[in-house]
Image 1 (cartoon, helix red, strand yellow):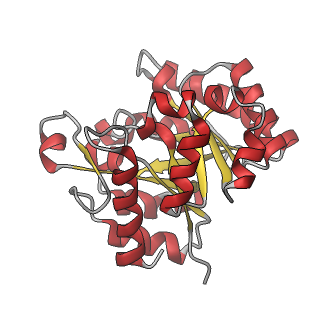
Image 2: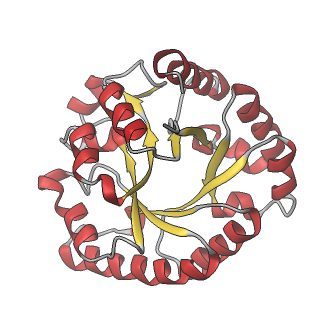
Length: 252
């Protein structure tokens, strides 16, 4: 049985990822990650990104977009094709109104880009936050209903599922056939109760990762991405703690 490979979302490095990507990639590789997910804007500002990744033994797993901008999406697909990346992942951050009409409109955009992605050998994914999960997953149900499984997969963020009021393992099990990969994120119970997220390294918050990892291993999911949005400490140390947790507890 093939175990998932582990990648890093560069968001925790914030402005450093844009200003000094080579140094950030050094840290990612030193920690022991095998690939990265980052934004289209960051990667496109480094014409030598392919060599930067290759020299450190890293793979471009996904590019993340927070808005429904077709021009940026096309640029992202071109970069994925050039660098051998896998996923163009959208979130609903561009949705100012969380109405059925707006979700349907967003789903149609995702489907259009999903069709386009075929020509680039890439897969479009949708990344959830908490707002698609609340109210009995109102928003997520529309996204899933209005998109084809072959055109739009899911990147499930386990923390945001929990923050939205659902059990992550249950949600993953129900939608396993639509999931391309996961964002592994942890946070405090207090942050969830107070609706004010407090993010932590994996294993230091309230997320029960065992059933999640068990499902991923059984399904032979190819990639799991560690994500921590922010920290008051050192980004490298936080991501190192998460990577050690996965290695020591789950042998990943």
